[in-house]
Image (cartoon, rainbow, N blue to C red; front, side):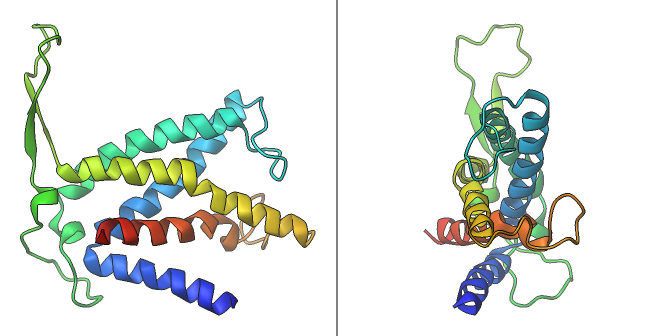
Length: 195
């Protein structure tokens, strides 16, 4: 059963890479950003426990990480969206440069700013890639839903009375402890991109 779960979810990751490394790299990066931001906000501002399974996780960390992840998603999509090497679909896992028409998601669109913006503001319109709006959805998922993969893993560990899945990263557990949210995000990113 565990092999079906692991290889099933991994196949979504590989399928996303073939659609363009962007669809793998952005979601994976958002999970890492969310994890780091939750730790930082929880460490400095955390007072209210989020769930009993993980007493070190706090509401302040969860909310701070959510805001940070959503803003990061919007900015990273703009940065990554301009690189054909990241946005072009692949036919194999070669590392050569790709040249393609990335499609309408990666072509900038201009938006006029509303009239209530002060006249001294230097820009009257902004240029945004449509994929940046989709990145907001990925950021929302990475910050609100994907952490429940971590909560599930915490419950699983408590049920078997183990603290961490491994000790390869001192103080953080093993590689599995770092990957629990990545699995959930990989499935969502693939399904989101296909629909």
